[in-house]
Length: 337
Ligand SMILES: *Cc1c(COP(=O)(O)O)cnc(C)c1O
Image 1 (tube, rainbow, N blue to C red):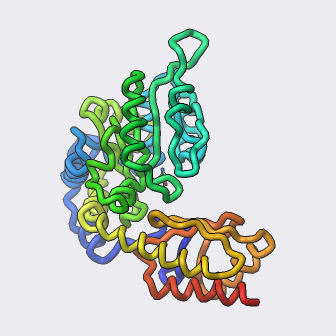
Image 2: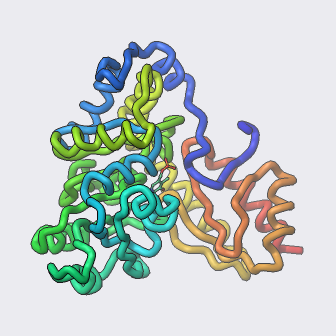
Image 3: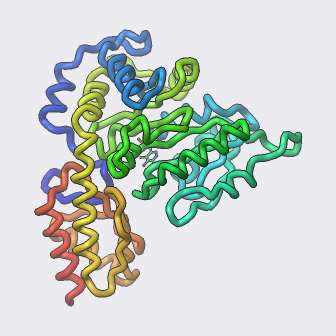
């Protein structure tokens, strides 16, 4: 699908030639025995980069988040989480199904945050009527929005004061860091554990890393095995992840610039409401009657989107400025008629 302009997600990227070379040349071993030197190198590198004692490589972000929830919470425990959060809404209810962990969803504010008062109000008293509130799970970026650093500091401090652990679904935390001009360590400050996707804007084909305290990661390995995420000669995949972390973090700024460019072009079209992107994701409100014919007009020009009345557009390392000019032109032409 290389000749399509694909704006559905930043998960659609193809590994570049240099990444493929790194994968092909990777030294490998059986990682269930801890023998894969490239997986070990990725885990050590990620732990260092994000400022944690240890890290664990797993096949997906859904799995690293689930491992974290299972390791933080036990049966009858509860985690506080946003209504819009991936770990609540988009992971098949895994924490409840597989962990007997109750989510306590909280309405997200317009900026993606959870109000501190809402967090405080949902921490249950130690009383046998209630689930035991164990964990605050935040997400950054969330729907392309960056949580402000001061907010993250206040929310994680509140959680810790009340005896909760903190987990960050940092699938796109590198976007947040680059946008905010923070180091990766600064961007995850306050979180006991963080899950980072290598397969989104960073451009690796597969994988996520979970970072945290050494003991927690040891416990996480047990859960990863149980969930079927113990892989064998996975160093080829880890090599892609290492390449992504070494080469593709700072370039996320290009994706952010490209999203800003496309959003500005589209917002010039009368009748289209376009959100202002903070990072590489933004939304266009497409009047319902235009959804199907607009999707058709885009597809005719080999442009792929997940059409919806609230259309999400995502930039990434396989779409370039010139292609976005074409996309804007197709939108403009369609709405001219
Ligand atoms: C993609 C994503 C995940 C899960 O990653 P998969 O690798 O697709 O399982 C988790 N959280 C957020 C915010 C994501 O965007």
